[in-house]
Length: 506
Image (cartoon, rainbow, N blue to C red):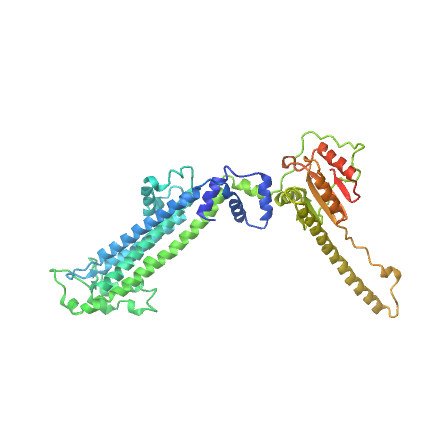
C-alpha cells in the first residue's frame, strides 16, 4: 500500500463504500487474501469513480516538488559548506577538525536524534520532528499559491503518518547534503594542491588524536590502510598558529600533508553517506508500516472488511408471512430445502458476482457457475447448455471408471482366494453409483418467466437429470422470494410440465 493508495481510500470510503452484496462479491473473489490485499482490490475496482484530478494525484505532485526542491537545496548547501571548509589560500593549511565535525560529528548526532524521533513518531506533538528542516521547508512551500494545499484542504493525514513523512524526507535531504559535501571534497582535491593539518585549543597530543582517528577509521582500516593517517603524519600535520607563520618542519613535509584527503573522503562516504543510507532505508520501512496502520484506522475500513468477509445476513419479517396456499394452478414437484451442493448453478440474467454472493448466503457449493439469459444470444445460451452437458459427462465418467477398476481388483482377489471358483451372478453386477446430474437454476422472483427462459429450460432438461428452479428475492429480503412471486413461477412450471424440473418453495 502506497501513500497515493491511502489517499485514494480516504477519498473513496465516505462516498463510494457500496452495498454489502457488492463488497461481499469482491470478498469472495479474494477470500484467501490478507485484509490489506482485499482493501487494495476494492480500491482498484472503485478508483475509477473518482473525478479527476484525484486527491492522490494532487498530493503526489506536491510531494514530488517538495522532495525535489528540498533535495536540491540540501545538495547545494553541502557543496557550498564543503568548499568553504576546504578553501585554501596557501597561508594556512586546512583544518581537518572542522571537516570531521561536519562529515562525522553532525551526521552521528542527527542520526541519533532521528532514531529517537522514530521511537516517538506515534505522538502528535513530536518536537524533534517539527524542528526538522524538512518540516520547516514544507511549511514555507505551503505559502506558495501553486502548492496544491488548497485542493487538499479536506485531506487529514494520520498524525503518525505525517511524522514519518517528515522523518523520511529529512533523511533524503541529509543524504543529498552529504553527497554535496563529498563532491566538494573530491573536486577541491582534484583542482587544488591543499595542505591539511589539525589544530585545536584543547590539550590533545598526537597520540590521542591518532587513537581518535583510528576509532573513526575502524570500518575501513583493515581493507584500506592507506586511508588511515599514521602517527608520523599526525605529528607532522599538527598546526600551531603563532606569529602568523608556518612551522618549518610542516613546510618541509608539505607533500605528505595532502594524504589526509583519503581519510576525509572515506569518513564522509562511510558516516555521512553510508550510515545515512541505512537510516533512510529504516525511515522508508517505518513510513510503509505507518501507511498500512493508517489505512486500517480510516473511517469505513472496518465496515468494508466486515462486509467483504461476512455473508449477507438473511432478514426475517417481524410478522410471519402468510403461507403459500396451493391452488389448482400450483406446481406439485416442490422441495422445501435446497441441497448443500449442486453439479452446476445457473443464474438467469444474473452476473457471476451476484450468483456467488447468493450461493455464499444460501451455503451452497458448486464446481460450475454459468449466467445464461440477459444480454446473451440464443447461440450463447445453447453453448452454455452444451458446456454443462460436456462437464456432466466428464464428472460422471470419473466415478464409473474408478468403480470399474475397483470391481476388477476385487474379482481378481476373490479368484486368488478361491481357485477354480467363478464369480456369482450377484458379484457380476456392480454396485450402483450415483451419477445423476443435478442443476440449480436461480431466477429473479419479481420478474415473470419469459418464453426464452422456457426454451432454455427445455433444452437444459435434455442435458441433465434434475433441475431445481429457485426464485430469488432481493438482497434486502435476504434473497427470500415473496409468496405471490413464487405463485407466478409455480403456475408457469405447471404449464410447462417437465418431469425433471422441481420448484424450491421454502
